[in-house]
Image (tube, rainbow, N blue to C red; front, top):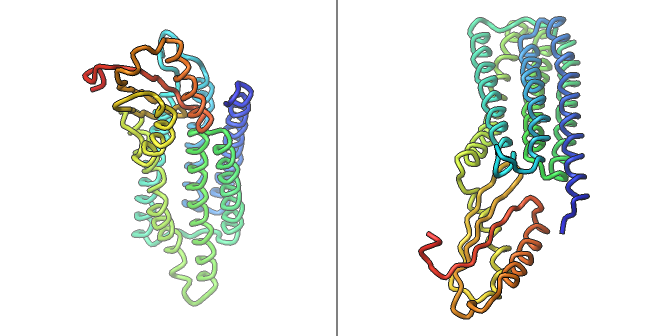
Length: 310
């Protein structure tokens, strides 16, 4: 069964990951804004603005990550983990708005005939930004998996989206540079806005999925059916030795925590079981479930009246 030391290690990894993300954002904001001024590129400027938004939300993420580790209190009877899906919803919504705005601006630039840019240095920026974003995304993905942190996982996805956007800028500038030194130089200014529109269309499903998943948690919907089924497959065998007619369980995911409310409709053969024996059953079931997922929180109720379940 996971110990308090294991939990401290996960928390430490989460904080390291979030600080890594924040430091990366500061670096790439400065890089993008500097190259945007020098190359006169709106696409690079958008990349910098996207990173600046990530910096602002990153500060909130670190604060929420610390709050999520607090125990329940008089204000938050079920702990602070419900703040995590709220923050993820907010971050994904901002990302969606920024992407839509960028696509609109790219369409406007396209209709205006494109944008002349210093393509050589823009390619240098694209290489640095694309490679850097994907490296940070992969590091955060590993940290998120080890720390079992939704916040870090969302940060990883945000960096992946940023990498895709930077990749579109790189590809666009390579093509535009090639066109600018050919007989088709008049087409070069159109490449950047076209590719930016395309990559935004491909990237939008990522924050869209985060938005929908976070909304499910906020309005207390059950997790996806596959998750609920897997929980049932692991839970029911831990209680199957109890004389019962029915095991009913309800699942709610709140940030990093997964809450299970379990009702066991027992038979008459269970009447002579003491409270200490019931507690032993609960501890046994919780030990097995937490070994699978340390962030599970469970309540197990034994009832004889079926009307108390529904």
